[in-house]
Length: 208
Image 1: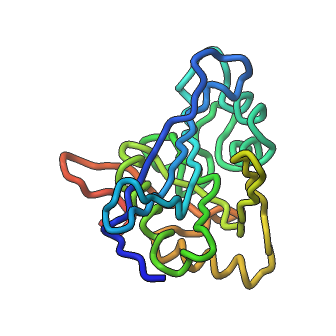
Image 2 (image 1 turned 45 degrees about the vertical axis):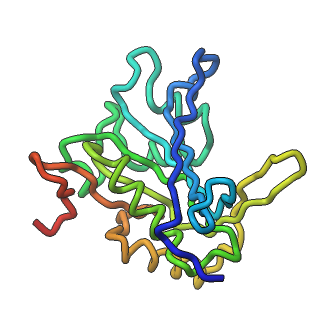
């Protein structure tokens, strides 16, 4: 199936409750969908890819620590905080500890529906996230593990890790490397610096 990238629209929503009932409720989460409109017909849209990006800001809430909020959200998010923040919730792991901002956008998952894969959809979503969500953040971080979405009746779906073989993970790391991500040494994560310098639209990527 041929896909015209000009017919893709990115939809982003912030998933955050009005009232806080548990520590993780303070964590802003972006739910991102890539919608394909056939022939730009607004009545013919298909969700061809999706992503979840979690904003980690140590100074977002004075009443609840970032580590407590992440531990309430998931084991994976709690492990990330342990791996990159110190007890004062500032970066301790190089090269992140040289950044101005200690805010991280964690790419929780990125999935492209099977029949739309290898058509630049994943690239489109990642580049949109970097361009429109990452401004003024310290870095964007991800764990390059293969994932798939399992759909259930009633519109419910669940994200599962699929083939975690070394070869498959290396393919995923290769994909993100082309987008400017590097291995965060001493961890399983990859990162890309996202700090914005000056009054231009140029994001610092370590090369200037």
